[in-house]
Amino acid sequence: MYCSCRRFLGHAIYIVTIIRRRNSRRDLMQGASSSLRTAFSYCVQQVRNYDYHHYLCLLELPLDMRKAAFALRALNVETAKAMDVASDPRIGLMRLLWWQEAINKIYANKSIEHPTAQALSAVISENQISKRWLTRSIEARINDGRREETDIPECIEELEKYAEDTASTLLYLTLQAGSIRSTAADHAASHIGKASGLLLLLRSLPYHASRNRHFSYLPKEVAAKHGLLVKEGGRSGISLDSREGLCDAVFEMASVANGHLQKARELAGTVPAEARPVLLPAVPARVLLDTLSRVQFDVFDPRLARGVLGVPHLRYQLKVKWHSWRGKY
Image 1 (cartoon, rainbow, N blue to C red):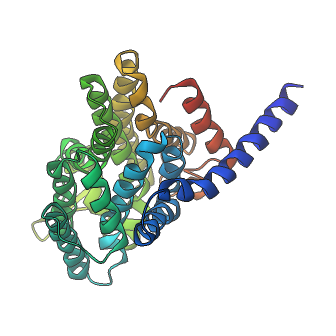
Image 2: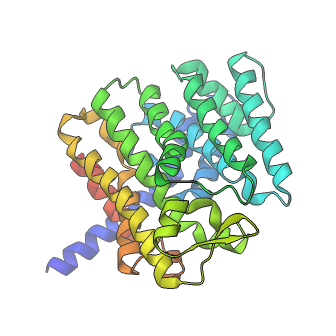
């Protein structure tokens, strides 16, 4: 009986999710011009295609916050993949610099012929969106893109700073767009962003290893502790020859991420109810952490690439929906 009810609930949520996908773009466009409708539709599709686990989180936001959230996430998609899709790092860096200039133009009330920029411009004109947080996020991507292959972070704190500048700022900006002013929510957002950022960097290690950039996101202090740091010609590098050492290094970094999630959960009682949907990205962070634990922190385990963050799509949707219904994160 329990299993039947659970299956029924799963199918019901799946149907609701499909309907909400179809309605999401339509709802966002109400009252918008044709060009803006196209721009916001583009943003929704970009987030769905490249950031699906957060796409499902955004569907749980109130409608008046969803438009800003999709535009902000779409900007993050554009800047996050700029270096990865470029055949030459210099081209990727030029793309990031273009977005930096685009933000300046948006705040100077200048039009830009790019759908994400057009949606973002509309959101900025309607909400109190901090230019400081937007530029901070893009500057973090630019600084990361400018690093040489031999520039290895010294410590985990450097990666925590990068995670806050790129992931936490998205949550700060979404809270701003919803006119939510809460120190507790900001603190929780900081921890959730750091956890999310660190875990996604760990998940991306195999991809960057295939592009000879695996050393970019393992700090020297962690690599040295687990026998992964090598020196050649007076320069330091990371060796992935020891799978056991790599798993131990990933476990150490994942433990730091877990600490941030625990601190965010401890703040839950002081976070206002209207801020909790914004903090739902804690759910995918926990899912990814649990998947890493299940594969013994082996980032090359193919199970990490299955479904959504290593779990079946429906199970992931259930987790997000369950937390949303309960007003938890």
